[in-house]
Structure formats: C-alpha cells, structure tokens
Length: 57
Image (cartoon, rainbow, N blue to C red; front, top):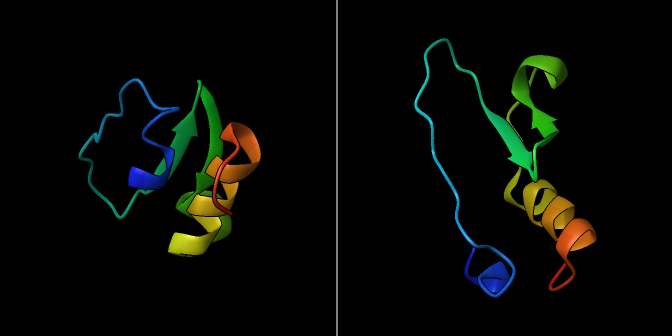
C-alpha cells in the first residue's frame, strides 16, 4: 500500500468469518474471493489500484 500512499486518504480492514476476502475501492467492489472462489494475488490487488489510482502496476 505504500506505493499508493499519496492517493489513499484512509483504508479500513474489516474482520469477518467464513473466509471472506473483498477489496472495495471508492465504494466499488473490485475483488471478491466469494465470487472468484480463490484468494487474490498481491499483483492482482496492486494492478486494480494502479488502474484506478495511477502509480506502480
């Protein structure tokens, strides 16, 4: 996340149960483990941030 620090005002980690992993950016769900059936890679999450916010990708 340090690569995008200048673009991020805040981020929140919300613990949950049942293996849920979702990434929401500006109110939009951009990754869902429940929908894909697998956990996102670091690169996938980074690429979504880069596409939306600019920066490393």
